[in-house]
Image (cartoon, rainbow, N blue to C red; front, top):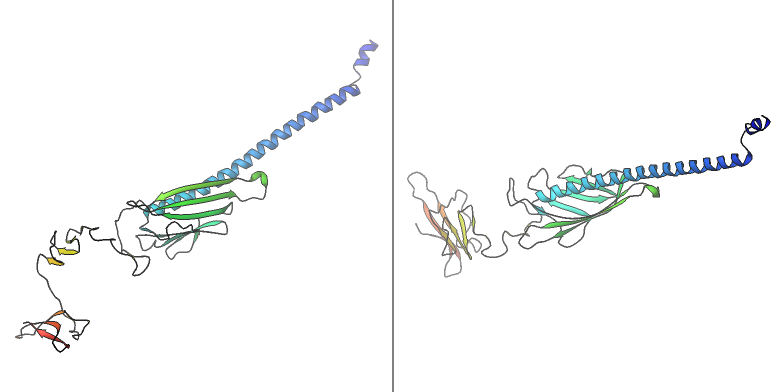
Length: 273
């Protein structure tokens, strides 16, 4: 009976030390698992934020490149600014650029709007225009986005490389405008264009109006009207060869004149009717 009561007095010192050791180990494991789960959640939050903002910025850039009339930047030269010419005056031009870790979007004369938030930091954004012979121009995009934090455990960086080509065909619903005055040409060489509206035709250096295969520098199938309602200019070297019709009033015939140079090297209007 005495021995039974002695065994029920409590834990021995060794048993207490073993219990405390096991308890500390269990708590340590639990704390480690908790920290690991918390870190995974923070990392997942950072990656989701970076992925969402990077994809939104990239999809916006893609949409406007595909619908642009012109990629207005030098070929094969990296730039942090993308300039697009758009068919709609209200949208033209469009700028997309990087400033202080934020991607900005500017349409026409409107104020710039951010495409990314301060939750991320864009460390690199560069555009390179690629000219593709026989196809539409494209833009190569290099983008690096990181989660905006000083905590190394929350760092997440995403690198994106993409190439986007213009999709829109030469269909216009507004004026055709060049990015630089008196610089561009329609067609690079003779014979590149066949006709305009099946009315004005080209054959080598010959032009035909309602003539599909012109045999002269200018061949017209139909009448040619000279509307000279303005004042007749002076006959000079600059107007040499000009044909002018002066419309007569009631009971007065019209007159047809041409500006020519005579044998004494002076210029005068010569009446042919």
